[in-house]
Length: 416
Image (cartoon, rainbow, N blue to C red; front, top):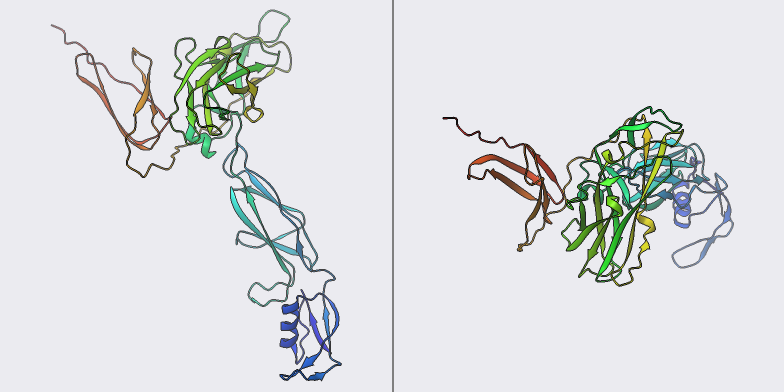
């Protein structure tokens, strides 16, 4: 009788190598087997040889992996859950060829990035130094999808690039500092932070000519809405881009007294995705009064989309819904997004270079926003009305949607 242990230590016999090869070729589990040895001419040499394989009653099994895709909280927010059994415990797990570690089933990997991943499980008898180890092992693969944000609220300095690459954290809260008022209601909002926040959302073009409306609703616990920065005369904070942050032809306008926005798009590619961006001014809720405790009010932002035909019928895009709470007395600890860049264009082409400048005229501060679909170096030179250079600014990391704020110093007229 040949003796051999699957997923366990080998019982040494004179015919160990033969048993090892036999078990490995046929992937046999524990049990007793009769097998026949024949010579090169097909003649039966021995009909009474038995092979005994001992070990666990079932082989190690790493079942199909569960996972969650990335969220808008950051670039490494996916999870993978491994469930395993069989073999000989204790077990070890390995993610993408990393260091094995002891784990019990089920085990969840956190902080996982987008992309394909492989999880490998080993039982107690696996020898990492022996490629022919008789210990049990099993392997499964899964793909964690990248961030797919709907409409979400992001802190100041968030750009289109930050949004589409998932490199910005969602705004935790809009925090208010309040003062008491002599009535039966709650406190009055005195200060609101951060100074501004952004709404971002993907929308899909239903037709070549279509309309988008961003609408805002709220709970009844605070009596003021957020308004778009620049309302009523400055439309520069109503932006629409391709899903790679390229330029789009559109006409924007305020709706609902500056709490929402409308975009009319012509010549779109049907089925293409676009990025809606609106900057809101948190100071617009100053003076609002909370209705009662708890002093929290939830604001909801959602994009409605439809063909531009009369009568205008727009449908809510469920994936575009975003929320932010105004919370009395909280602290805003949302991390600001870092620098972001998209792949530069590699072909040579003629493009239109655009930018927004505000306010115009300006007194001591000027903000410039870039509107072109590639990364490049920018040199900004500011002149006064007499043609004299007030300031020169070099930006080595310019990209679509980036804003720079400059503080030119005016040349004082010499006194006689």
